Image 1 (tube, rainbow, N blue to C red):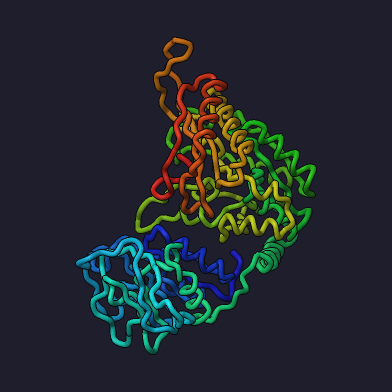
Image 2 (image 1 turned 90 degrees about the horizontal axis):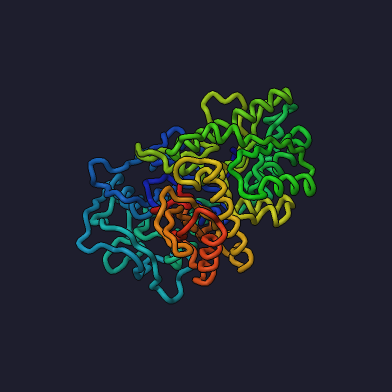
Length: 516
């Protein structure tokens, strides 16, 4: 991971919007990263943060098993911003009192600003009342020594606070969400006013730092890059190639779980439009054998991950002197694969939790700290064509995690034909670039239908289309009924073995984008 001279560290207490805090800070061109609230104090100190944010969370600070960070944070001499639960924790750890509120505050609220400096600098003019977003059932009842009120709301007399001598501030509302109309101003005042950061974290500076880091680490060695054709691996390849040129060899593995025509189009693109050295390997039969009889999604992901590494290591041995494997791991992959509060990760991403512990190749993951839209911005900065940058995301395990249950050649055939129809209709209608992702899923059930006056008992296809910025949160796309109707009609009429099509109207959270 590249080093950053200025950074804001966010300690996560389980809020669904923690990643939004990081996003909002990065939008100000200041680097930020998320860590569990259990982060060791010495490790945190060694990071030399410019500021620390304590996120919101679902717990109450007075619960027996409440998540508690090390109070030594307040002895580091670093500005600290507490948000919602983080604000209440700050109050409790520094000598205040938090209790269950008589009236909870959820949703929009009106904030009355009393102190127009610090977090509220630049808000001296009317209106003095601003819309914010609250989400809490507790409230601060007594302030610790040295703190004073900077804003209040109808049910929170201490809606925003500051320490009069130390750089500690707290807000009961959520500045990271769009419903808080002054949210960006509040975060900007924290970042630049209290933390004294500078807007220097750009994709241009990221390229310079990362290229230098890769050169230094690789030296005269060789690097393999796992190339899928998706934006993540494509940008990874371009970035590593800029650093070490012909020391990079890309490997495209057809795992038999690709969409119709995908392998051919990916190889054609890289061979015709880039200077990358690309080796292609058809491992269809190997992966289908490995997945035979496997229904559990975690086992599928891990078998696919192990299979990729096995092939990469075999190719590395053929090439000789290959020490490194470059891959397009993103920040959301890392966050979702982390164990939080003793709970299982959301899912093991094939390139994070799916990697064997004793892998022979060292990993190079230059995008590990970036969100998807930052990767696209990076790709454009590297001069990559838009057709490579604005493809919809496609998971590394491919169609293997869009088939619920066992993966077989027959079931892959049904899903491929259905997926082609979804993509064709999305592109023809102009909706392909409007949504984050759209695809078909084959369900592990069959239902009764009627075709040609005869009874059928056949498969069900689910259509999934979502709107998102970074895949950490997503809403289902409100596609036009006539578009959904055309997709459904075509799949049922053109794909033998399907007699029912459904549309997934779940958001993330609580659902994930992919079904497995």
